[in-house]
Image (cartoon, rainbow, N blue to C red; front, side, top):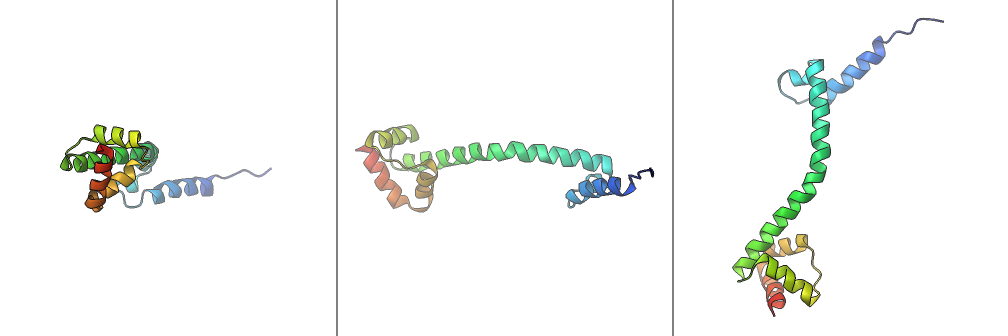
Length: 115
């Protein structure tokens, strides 16, 4: 049986990692050991931040709703409580959009929740 040579396979593995790091700064883009560390760490960050993004956007929406609610003389907690009591089902993303881009419509929603 002929001897198996790993030159082509190993070069392919290395090129995959180095090409994935194109655009990185310094040794992280071409030195294999450093590039491999950067490659794996970037995967860890990407995995973590796909989950963090959901939290971060919710925090942003709540901040915007609270700012809009305070301009209309109430707080975020009272607004959400009032909306639930009235049975108005608007999610936080929609409320934040209204608060930033359509303040008159948001004012009407706040007045409805206060009543």
